[in-house]
Structures are given as C-alpha cells and as structure tokens.
Image 1: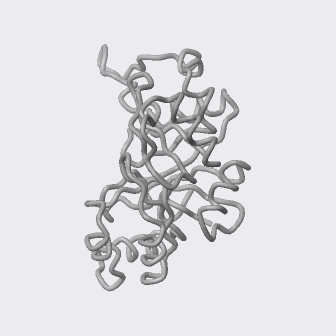
Image 2: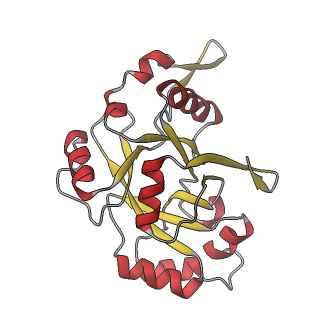
Length: 224
C-alpha cells in the first residue's frame, strides 16, 4: 500500500480542501493521487491536527483514504521539524523535543524527523559540501527519541535526501518518504510503501512502529 505521509493543504480548512480533493477536477488532489498510484494521503499541517470527523467525511466523499498527522516545529538543532502520527491534537509545549517525545509516548503515537538535513549542503569551492559528517549527524540527540526519519522528501535536494538515507542506515532506523507538497502538483513525488493494508490511523501507527514499510521515490511512472 502506497501512502504519501507528508502533505499540506493550501489552507487548513474543510471547504478549501473539499475543492482541492474534487475528483472531477483534473488538477485536484484525488485525481493526481490516483494518477500517481497513491492509495492514501496523510495530512500533516504545521502544528495543527485535523478533526477526525472532517477527515472521515473527506475519505467517504472522495474515495481516497485520508489520514491525519502533524508537522511539529521544535527547538532541536537547526532543522527543527518532526512528523507525528497517532496524536489527536497539538499539545501545549510540543515545541520542546523532550515534551514532544513524552506527549507522543503517552498518546501512543510515533514520531519521525522531517527532512532532517535540509540545507545541510552549502556551496564551497565550486561544489556542494555538507556542514556535518555522517558521524556527527548520527550523534544528534533527536535520533535518541524519534522512531525514525524521513529519508525521501519531495521538497528537499537529492543530495540531502541521500545524506538522510545514509544516516538512517548507519543508525539502523526506519525511513519514510513523503512529498511535503503544499498543492496537488507535487503529491506523490515521494511516498512510503507499506507491506500490509492501512485502513485507518491505528493501522498506520502500528505499521510504523513495526517498521513494515520502506521509503520510495516516484520515477518513470512508478515508485522505486
């Protein structure tokens, strides 16, 4: 099952999103998602969680499974964002990584570091050079509390995704993929392929915790 685990609506409001999802519009999210082989999309607004009833209504109306998560802006290092699944609301103080980790554990959720090395590369001597070594990156405290990291992000440089993938392998953690798109244009550029069916958020959290998935990039009409 193929899921875009990192997607933002243009405006986090139900009416605008109904328009975005309208299957009859060729530029709408559902149309693009189906066209690109997605089975589900997870709405991960910044510091906001969709209401369960609104997401359920969208799923029933449009025939595409819509899941919920959120992207939390935190105080860790220079990178800062964490994707959270299985939490019903934004909890006060989540910006602090330690409080975030406790809240996610208490709620039975799971957290993955979002685009962990975006802008880790800078231009120097005519080429791209990372500001961290893989060894230094692996020692970042965030990886002691997260369950994994996003290794394929559609809004991030290829080199930075490859850096994240190498860190993921070194730490022997699980890596996800998501488009990080803010419109239907980029949906499904990166995704996560699950071994088992995902029917709801409980399934999503269970499979993420179990590590029964892999990150993928869409190339030549398919995911690799």
